[in-house]
Amino acid sequence: MERVLEPELMDDVAQARAYARADFAEENQGFVDRFREYFPDWTGGHVLDLGCGPGDIPIRFLRAFPGARVTGVDASRPMLDLAAEAVAEAGLADNITLCCERFQTLALPEQADAVLSNSLLHHVPNPLQLWFHIKQWAKPGACILVMDLLRPESPEAAQALVDHYASDEAPILKRDFYNSLLAAFTEDEVAAQLAELNLSRLLIDVPDDRHWVVGGVIP
Ligand SMILES: C[S@@+](CC[C@H](N)C(=O)[O-])C[C@H]1O[C@@H](n2cnc3c(N)ncnc32)[C@H](O)[C@@H]1O
Image (cartoon, rainbow, N blue to C red; front, side):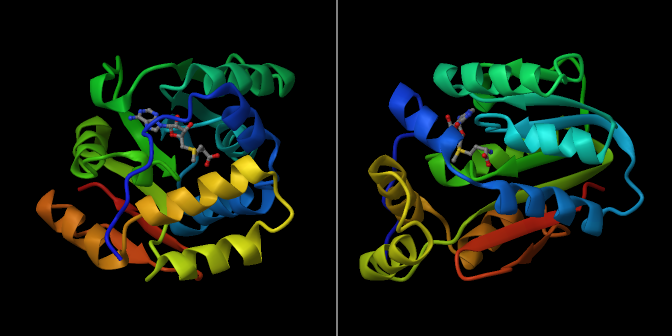
């Protein structure tokens, strides 16, 4: 199945609220646990979370790594408003800076010791832009962890994943999950993107039936 683009930003208020209300605890904590597993010696520094959405991953990351400072970037104002509320509620406003900006036009005052991104790449029309900017913002030796959905082989296979994993979710969330699966990349496409940007030292893993993960250290 060919990739079908979905809107880049999740900037509809109802859509952002539905996403923030959904229970991604296992997936998001799994992302943070995977970072520790991949990079057991990493203890702290400046972390960039691209497409941070409602802020759950930065909050979980800071609880796991109190020596970190996170810059969360998302160009959706409704998402960042929800992130700001969650960060304040978690008492982490001094450690998490939120930037409402497209990563393609972001100017960062400081490079990063770690770059994270979960579920952003499938939103981006030109995926090479994300890898290019990760490379630009990562310090030499920085740890990279990027995860996203895998595109299934057919619309029917995508619908089967929605039915299996999101049957109890709000209709808006089911719609977004389906559209995101159609907009996602295959493992081979991600490998080709990394090769094109000379990032083949980062390794790809497919941990389950609907995700890929790229991790490694920037030389
Ligand atoms: C599916 S959400 C993932 C949120 C979060 N990373 C998580 O795992 O909970 C993707 C987010 O990326 C944001 N986004 C999409 N394109 C972007 C861009 N070019 N620059 C910044 N944010 C972007 C969307 O607005 C949305 O909030």
